[in-house]
Amino acid sequence: MSWRPDLSFLRRTDVRLTCWYSLSLLVILALICGFFAYRLYHDMIKQVDALLRDEVKEVEGFLRQEDSGVVTVKWFIRTQLDQREHFRLRLRVIEIREGGVHELGEPSHSGPFFLDASLLEKLRRGRPLFHTIPARIPYRQLSLLLSSPSGGSHLVQISTRLDLIRNALINLFKNLLVLVPAVVLLCAMGGWLMARKALWPIHRIATTAERISARNLKERLPSPNTGDDMDHLIRTINRMLDRIERSFEEIQRFSADVAHELRTPLCAMRGEAEVLLSRPRPAEEYRTALESFMEQLERLTHLINSLLLLARFEANPRLERSESVPLAPLLQDLGEFFGVLAQDKGIRFDMSSRDDPVVRGDPGRLQQVFTNLLDNAIKYTPSGGEVTVDLRKSPPWGEVEIRNTGDGISPEDLPRLFDRFYRAEKSRSRRTGGAGLGLNIARKIVEMHEGRIHIHSFPGKAVSVTVRIPLSHSTPPASI
Image (cartoon, rainbow, N blue to C red; front, side, top):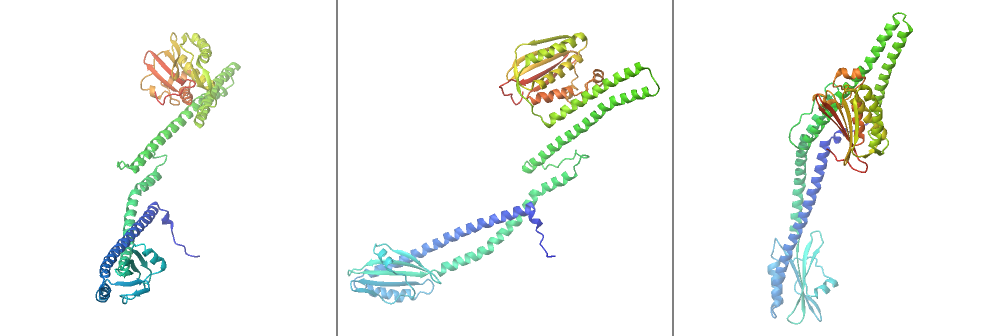
């Protein structure tokens, strides 16, 4: 089996960040060094060109002497240029006459000169020309055409080797080849340490998250309180854990409440059945027991239907249908039904309508909301009390207020009235047959309609429930 290197460490975030930063730094340094080397080369070439220009001016002064110019140039070549040891110059002077060309003396420091017909043609325009002659050691050459006092002209070419510039650039690149990798290596080490330090909180988050389970949902991630992005991430995760903990507690409470609600009627039915089966009984007792069983079964059916409805709301919190719904006819139909129930109980039932608001929603669901609220109002209003329904338009809302007299609700119970299976009085719902789901279902439906529902209590006097549904063709505000 062939050996393969383990490259799994390359998948680590700190290693990948270090590699990307190092590569980016290397490219940037290479571009910067290349730019400065380019600028240095051209600045040094300009210095060489300035030197060649100064020497040509001196030769030009010699050639303008009518009698001794040529002799002076020859002397200058022999005594000045040929004697230089460090910064040597090459000079060639060619006299151009009608009879031909004549070179004045031997060129100093013999070597190649660049001259062709195109160059000579350009020089006739009176401008000096610079050229770089490629060779093993390149040369920089200045060519100039000067007029002679005798009527002819002189072609002057002066050049120098660029070995000093070449050696300077070579030394520069040698130093950069040592310096740049060292800088990149040091920056890579520093970047890796900084990446490790910056990513260490993520390791702590992962370690803590692995320990968190359903048994220790109260554990939270330690916050460094630095105010940076990592601190914001930790705070966000802790808030998410708070929501998960509350949801988990609600699920546990909900499961316990469901089990309790189902166990109570089942235990009652089983106990009654055991009593009936203990000995033979008259038919009338069996009939009474069966009627009691039917009541318990009806209660279980209502509970199960309510739970299924809530589950459907959780799975799909959007309306299945939406249309324009006039609230006045809907409440009038409900008022006729609940008015009879209120009369039987000795309760005064009154319904008033200032407007006829038209809302957007599902008429069946809205009817279910007001049915639950009216049923609660009549159930918990004592005989001789009063239930009033007030319908009005308050743009952008259509408002329905249901108010009933009675004992009211204590301030401690008011915030939890919409919780599932919550009862302000534990014995009251048992007596009236409720399961504590009506208000929760009503709130779910109202929220599906993008509406609001509020309960106000006046202990010892009355309870008021206000439902606000957005009017048709209007947009509800984000908050009220």
